[in-house]
Length: 180
Image 1: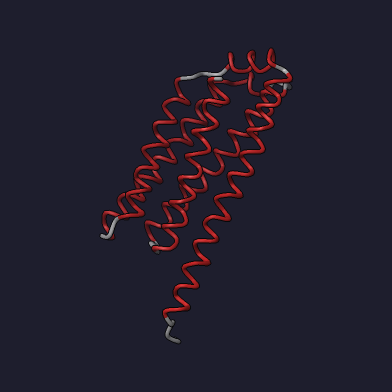
Image 2: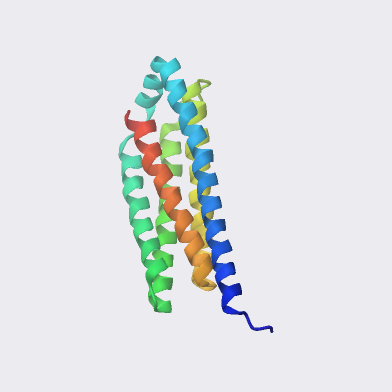
């Protein structure tokens, strides 16, 4: 195997950082477009949005916000740990938090029932936004769990950074969808 020079190691680290930020900003752009659409619909159809919000439960998404924040805290710990055991433990906890978020969100969908199937703009955007976020949390949780088995510092850095982006998206989405 050829030896890497210091210059090639720096280039590789730089390209990895660039990939992290390209992925992070593309995620923020995608969710940003959905959030802007939601805000525009809220302005254009305030009655429909108010009626849609009235059908939602507030306790579960509030609990889910705390779950995702704790999971993000464990992801931050995983990114900074020097011992393999602590890093893997933190990755497990972050992944478990993500999976708990998924379970609670699916339960919330079930509790909201048929009202989610309404043919109004609020319901459509609500399912699209929260479902898209849910898919990201599920996928991210599975990748975090995979990193427990195959830890690589660059991959852990990439995934924990993206995990924080997923957290940020929810922290913006939660008040816009459920509270405002």
